[in-house]
Image (cartoon, rainbow, N blue to C red; front, side):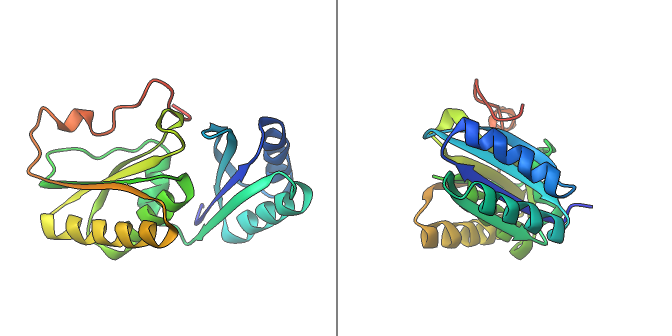
Length: 191
C-alpha cells in the first residue's frame, strides 16, 4: 500500500537512470515516472510505504548527491493524488472546477496534496508535462465554495515556494469545455 510519495530531480539523464536503479534496489517502491523534464533535468516520482520511500530517497541522496538538484517527500499522501498520478480522472458534470498551475512539479504536487486534504473537492486530474517548460498543473472539482477553498490552499503553498504560475476558478463550466481540461500535450510524461 502506497502512503508516501517522493520526487527527485537530477541534473542529467545518465544520473537519473542510475538513481532509478538505486531506488528500486534499495526498497520495494513503485516508480510512477522517470523521465526528462524541462529545463534539462531528470524527474523521478516514486510511491510506497513511508519507510521504504524514505530509505530509497536516502540511498539516492548518498549515492548520487552530486547530481541531485531537488527532493520532495509527502508522507501520508492523499489517496486521490496517487490515483490521479496513476491516470484516474473525474470530470463528470462538475459544478465548479479549479485549475492550479505551478512552475515546478514538486511544489504543484505538494499544493495538490494539501488542497485535497483541506477542502471537500475531488481531483479531476493532474498533469506533469515536459511540454510545459517544467510546469505542472492539477484540476479540482466540487461545489464552488469548496473549490475556492482548495484554490486558496494551493495558492498559499505555491506562493510560499515562489512557484505559483496561475490559478483559475471556473463556475458551471460548459460541457463543451470539460473534455479539454486534462487533454494531454503532445509530449506528456508517462502517457
